[in-house]
Length: 565
Ligand code: ARG
Image (cartoon, rainbow, N blue to C red):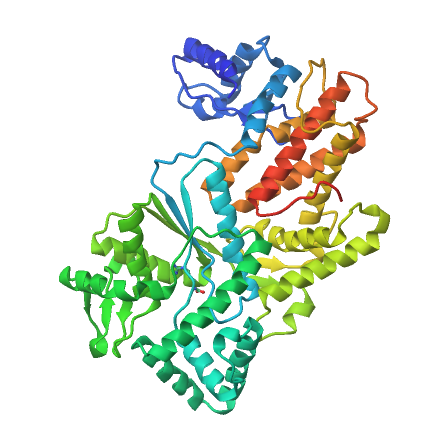
């Protein structure tokens, strides 16, 4: 980027100091500090035995009068800030336009496997389950858009004592229709009933464990029961996933690894990595500097564990896909598990790709309405419905202030978008705060604000009868708000890249928020449709560019944006 500026600076530095450093340009916070800036003087001053200021002067001198440079200044202790000419700035927007379409897929490349979703079957999804789903899907979308070969892989918990509980409840309190005729809600009430009754009568838990042991041993009736429950849940999940724009590429449940665990345990024992622990359990012990407790792979009663399956799954993925990375988008509560998993793979001597537990924090509720129901999980589906209901209310209240031919469709987009964006706009490493008012606000960093700004830009284009034609004319000068908007638009490609490789979707969300603010400030400051040429063409082109960036960015975050609102 800005290679001729780099070359001029390098030539001058080489002539003056005999060094040829890498001169990098960064976009500034805003046009009052130039459009781009370099801190090269600060970086090399010591090396060339000079002051930052003196080095900066050499750089500045070299840039003066260069084509594309409007003005320069030395700021702070040695930053060189550069204002570019309108032509030069607008030229850079080609890159922004390109970033709005997905890069050509590097098909031959080893895939990046992103492990996400992992719903537990036969229990309803709770509100907090949305975190892995949307953070994972945003990461997948970003990688895919960037041209990477990526596989979104869900690992549902489709095996475990919950099936025993359900069966006991079905036998005791179910109507006698075949289980496949049950709805998820009916299954859920059986499940809830089980837990209520088990409080009075703890022996039910034992019954459930016994039933599950029989299921594991291969009992035919129980296996059929299990398969049907999984089937019902899957159909229900599909509906939820369609609403959330979740698209899983591969799904292998816990049951899939049943046969794959023993070979791993044998391999580990042969290698001396897996040893006998207390009561005959099988464990992996780590070296002292790892500072990790032993990982259990088989209990003394012979049953396998979550860790055993995860280990078998790593092996399966290595064998079948030879991935270049394994990323797990899972709750921070499982940190220890993933540290142990990675350390165990090392001990097994497997050739490992990049490995990261892409964790996220706990969900906390700002709304009293959500925290008063303490103890019971808030179902994800109920939360989505609540979001949509609130959005519909806002649409009704705003009346003429919102244009739409299909208020229900808009409410769905807004309500679900609000929830999803409310999550993705927060740093995933911190606790995630759940706050309806903030999520649905029209003024702040929220989905409705983004959706509204997008619709506003499309409406301008509609009135001009212009789709997204971009045709930048030559202009002598730019207004402050045009310049600010262009400066932000120029950064889109970089932000996409950064949000992708750091696995931090909130960086993209923050960018989109800043872009909305810049576009709205521009919209309020400048006439667009009524402006004289060449300003009118310039402003319409900037509007089209902003509209496309907002749409592309929002969709990468799994949001949908309306053309009218
Ligand atoms: N089903 C698991 C849970 O709810 C999440 C699965 C995460 N993925 C994995 N490979 N362990 O805790």
